[in-house]
Image 1 (cartoon, one colour):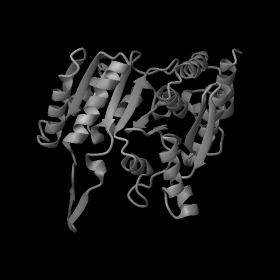
Image 2 (cartoon, helix red, strand yellow; image 1 turned 60 degrees about the vertical axis):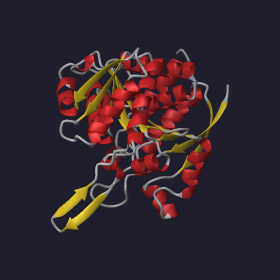
Image 3 (spheres, rainbow, N blue to C red; image 1 turned 135 degrees about the vertical axis):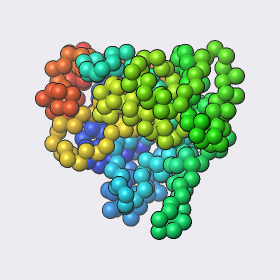
Image 4 (tube, rainbow, N blue to C red; image 1 turned 120 degrees about the horizontal axis):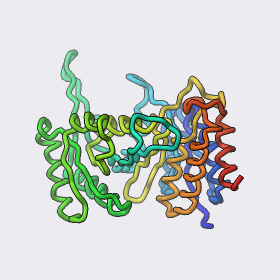
Length: 336
């Protein structure tokens, strides 16, 4: 089997625990990975006086692939989001968030299987804010034709590659007539190059309503950054929450795969955290690397453990520890 060098960011809070679980499962599945462990966030600041030190950035540049656990971002103060900084620095313009029902996780809907493709570098996440006076702040919603074109093309290419039938574009172009209007027009032009894919246009508020009524009608959805952030979390709720959600941030030649839930410092070190979100993100990473057989093997082992329901963590209404859940998956990989 091919050997891979992959940057590993264990994060903080429950990050190190769930990372250890995932790397152990990948090893037991037969993956030959040399993990280049680096620091980011508060832990990195303590050691390097920077939340994203050069050694971390250099490692990702060199390895091209990174697996990342949750990193706490202070709210309303402190350092800027490490997640956003990484996306900007490496121009990881496509955020991919699949939402699909998992075995034995009961939700109001049992037929969810959709993918959010979120533009990842523009919109208000560009961080362009100006203080006009003590009572007035201007925030800039950044949109470029290049950014709109490439994320729409990414969505159609994703649909073709993954045998999806439809791509829907999500905007608020009735209000944001220039920025969202350009996104919509770019989508329409790109769509002409993909005649085999059905298209749909929907306003983001209408989408949110329809998602909680009939989510199975949607397939691939592409949208600007802010809408993607909000809607992807909504869709995670449709399948059981952020704890089981997976994601990838993909650029031209670099990709970072990460769990989307928080660092949960209140349960850190208690051996009760659920590694499913990070494990499924690692499965996406294996697919990105072309290791489809191993990815499928790990996913089947996870699904089998979830379906049996004997070794589930507390958030999944079970009583098992992180280690017991991990060992159950490994035993499935071994055929036990």
